Image (cartoon, rainbow, N blue to C red; front, side, top):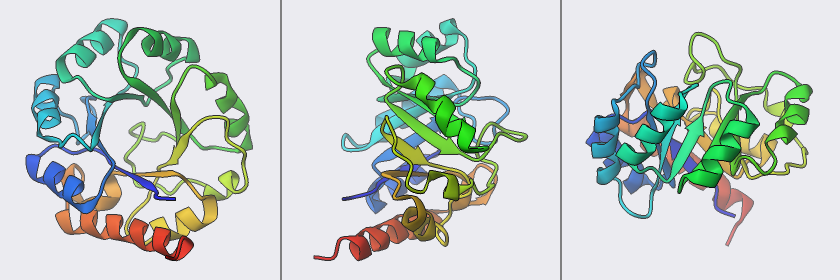
Length: 217
């Protein structure tokens, strides 16, 4: 099985080109003004057009109003909208029903109770992302999530792992959780909001190395 790779918080054409070339399956564009990775909807639309057709484009929103959500979808035309705030399952279900996008929901992995509460999103989201709990920002804080909570858990929905991943620990995270998708942002940066092309390449290679070890030819 090939692990899906999402490189999030991209803001330059060079970063998109690198992520696509190194094997990312998804790239993330952040529309949230408090984030150092924030891009305007117009910038996101330009970056979206840069992405090759085989890479899925994820637009991240945080507690966006219905009006902003609709405008963002129409302007950017993402493949996925990732909700990274306190959005309710019912709202995700409305978006899923009325917009031509996949709907993802990020959840801060605080305890085993998080996994129980995640069932509220069954049928409302297409994928859940388990991240470290929110701090100054909803995500992208570089704090490692508690992977042990996910070991052996039977997931009802497709899911992914985020939270403090980097080129050096993603192999351990995959071995511990068998996550089908890994999501990295701050772990491939030289400073907040500035992507490091070498780290992106190393992260993708580390995921490939894990996959090859798990599935030898």
